[in-house]
Image 1 (cartoon, helix red, strand yellow):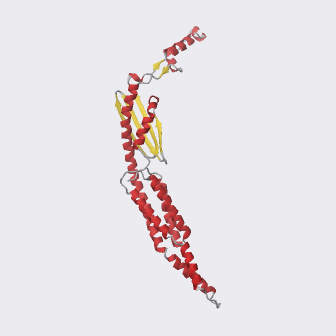
Image 2 (cartoon, rainbow, N blue to C red):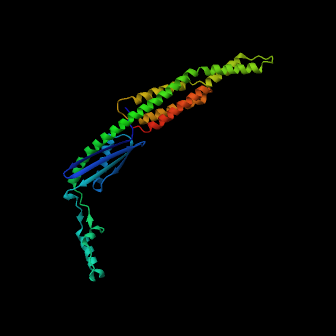
Length: 295
């Protein structure tokens, strides 16, 4: 079973008058990267939230967004009375106020230093922790389900490209033995043409040696065997059910498949084989793009 790195999950709950909401999004990334968007009052929980994500998710750029809506009296900000008194004292000493101008004391709360967040309440922090960890697990479950569904679609496309590579490779396997025979036929034809009007004979040993050199240079049996092996491993990973991450393994296998295809292309003079290898490389390139989306 394979999974995409793209997914979304959310969960929320209400506890003692406080509404907690969690959203988790993930996109492609070579490694695991957590991005935290927490309220200021929960910044001290960032490390624990990171651990909770890593426990459930592999690879990807994961964004965790947490919002808290508090309707209890504990949500009220503290008023810095000393700062407020100082502002009032200065305003009352101004000429404008002495001349009878009034002022709205309610607007003073927006001045710097008047409203202060309440001191950290360890009980409220513990309650937030107890509420948020299960929410993160629930959101991760949704995200993993989405990753799995997208992974199933990706698996179908990957296996279609795998089938294309396999089919074209079998044509290459059929054509490969004819390369040397075709070269020998062309070589003898050219020699016969050149020597048709001359009383010269060709040393058959030299001719055979030349053909053997070409046979050695154009032999792609090893590349075919290795590519077949890579395709077998690739299919095994796609169809595996152990739930382990396979993205990096498939990336490596894809690189190796492309390496073998390039080697075959450079060694084979056959136009038919060259055409088939172009098709193979095209399918491998499409596989390469898709496996970058896998966990």
